[in-house]
Length: 410
View 1 (cartoon, rainbow, N blue to C red):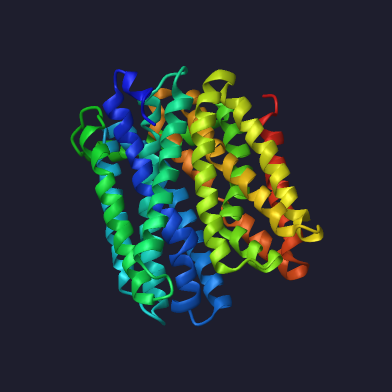
View 2: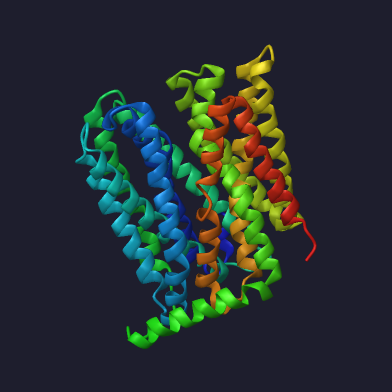
């Protein structure tokens, strides 16, 4: 997996950085997407409808907080040299609040939501600082392989953690599900240690009020000058749309499978495993392809296949083989999710000014979270007015808009 990385001069740092993706992916896989989210909706919340609404609002609050905080903290890290400090701080914070999710029981809605929001905010902010290392660890010749390998390694981590959870814990027993939170917290902290020890950062400056003031001034200037960076601005807007499509699939793909295609919970869990497998394969494979044909071409390929796959999922209920066609759509979606996200990260690392790497990766997080509630919200509205099947067309629209804007001349 890391054979080509061993040839790089800074191979220790690159592999250590890749381990951070391996460490943090189980949080999204087990807590946000597959296990704890369902546990909250079906066990902690008073009913499924209310639980779904509350969970969606918790994710929206996370998005708003991350959107506000990430550019500010990014600017502070750029001016003060505190990137590694923030990476470690938010990783530990996420692990603590994730472990504390063991405490809420049936009816403890407020406590569970507060812990989910705090852990998710910490997770997302840690990712901002992790992503910003890519520009230091790579060059234009190897950025695709490095980013793709790390992203694929992350999906491997999510897959192994999912297998461990399903093997050693009974997802039908509430206390076992609560123990999974502690398992994820320990996993995240333990496998982040290589990044903590071996990633390098420039020498820290003294923590003075002048650093804070400089951070806000830098952020203010960036807000004013971002329009000068037309290529970056255009990409961030495009990503805002197609990332909303991906978030909607992550949040509601399983619900669509159950509601429109009569999937059982076991089939949904198998779907999660399959998606992680193909996401890992796609990330590794297209990481190499990216360095051959260019990151922009891979993003375009991923978006076109995502559009096609979502349309397949849309028409699946009307066919004679609905589940088979949906599985094909799922495999295509899974294969392209990794390359799309990985290439977006590497494309961003190539086009940002190096002196503002943390700050612009803060904006990268902002566009990934600022409107992330729109896709699920629109899906819910259309489902209420018509059906889940037609709601899926909103995802197609997000992907198409992202593709058009990404390829717009500027």
